[in-house]
Length: 190
Image 1: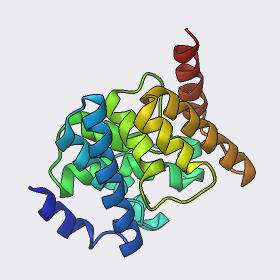
Image 2 (image 1 turned 90 degrees about the horizontal axis):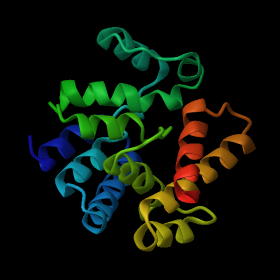
Image 3 (image 1 turned 90 degrees about the vertical axis):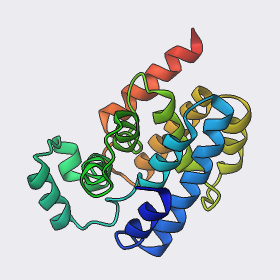
């Protein structure tokens, strides 16, 4: 399946606003992949499809959880926003016939991050934060760091932004995000 075919299917699965975002993430991921020596095609696909399960309601999400026998922890069950990456990876396998583990893993972890992320996982996580349609305080600085100062430094900034935001809206921070942040911080300090 080529990118155009994927886009045609995806636009029937998500809102137009989410489609614009997904194309922005895909384009940004391609640019970051060129800079950091990652597979450009993988980055483009992962960026495009990262939110394929984002527009599912809770009932639809639970349908896929049962259909694919997906394990969700208690936090992901309570905060379905954190589960769309995992569910999306299974949807990608089924609907888009994606079997590349690098792509699937980058979709799974694009919301929470994880310890010892691969280059593609970092690129998709960061591209989701800095694609051109994103507009929040500090996004321009994060873009500059991502394109000029390195994936790890921008990843730490992104984790810090996520944690501050989640605290501000009084939601649960998934422990995997805290571990990912601490891992990258230790790596940068060494």
